[in-house]
Length: 144
Image (cartoon, rainbow, N blue to C red; front, top):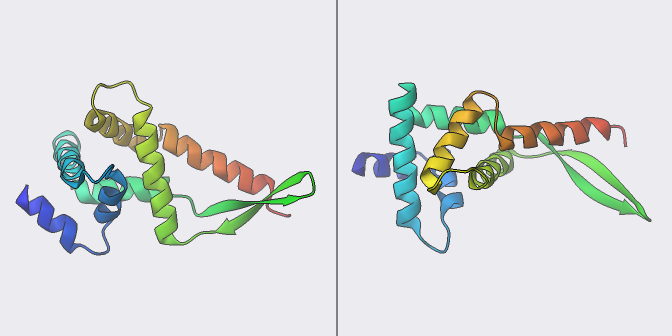
């Protein structure tokens, strides 16, 4: 566990500090860290791949490249497509993954998060559908 702690805090370009920061609720950093360690260990056992690269791959696959802003013009609502930065798109993907894991049926959050990550690997899950939904809205309103 010390090794994982060292890796999380020394890789500045890694997604792990962002993921850990989004997982923290009510200041319980240690609890979020234990859940993240459990997730990384289980990913290593189940997929036989590097869990850091696997998690980064899933987040980069889930992150959107474009988003939309809502502008009101009278009673009409326009959705204006805009490009978003890498950091913002990764944060959106992480938030979608954490929110969609809360909607799952398992007992504990760590199992919910693990099952959501594994379903993302097979192009399923709520967060992947959310990305496709945003792309539909952006493509529908691209010439406004």
